[in-house]
Image 1 (cartoon, rainbow, N blue to C red):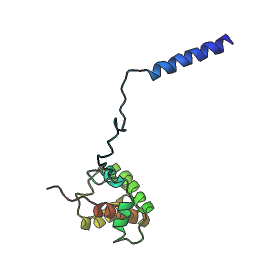
Image 2 (image 1 turned 180 degrees about the vertical axis):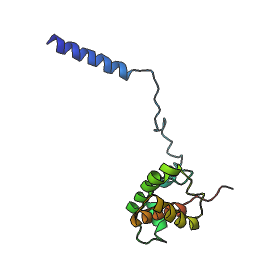
Image 3 (image 1 turned 30 degrees about the horizontal axis):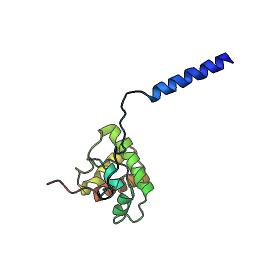
Image 4 (image 1 turned 45 degrees about the vertical axis):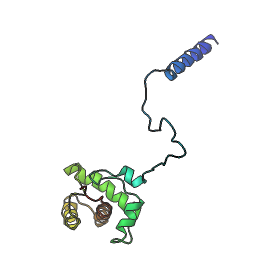
Length: 143
């Protein structure tokens, strides 16, 4: 019984010590709430997760944009294309900017590299839809 009490006491002391540490931790939560009269801007999710090189997990914005050229495109297709790009493609070439290559050049690149990487027709189609979706939502160049 004494061992159980001693174990409980040691555990309580360790937990208390850990909770009262002086080390500051970073949080993403605001430190103060805005006043009711202050406007609050909440960025759309897609804007918040886009990278500067165009390599990011696609969302509904990309699905909607690519459906102009590929009416049957789904989020699952784009996600498969993203996984291929960040897997097969970047394993050999590193992460290259999707934005830097003109849309007209991508089909030839995908055909040539897809053959070397032994991608199936379905995989090449998913990769094409992903690239075109990213290109369709590419931000305007900075002036």
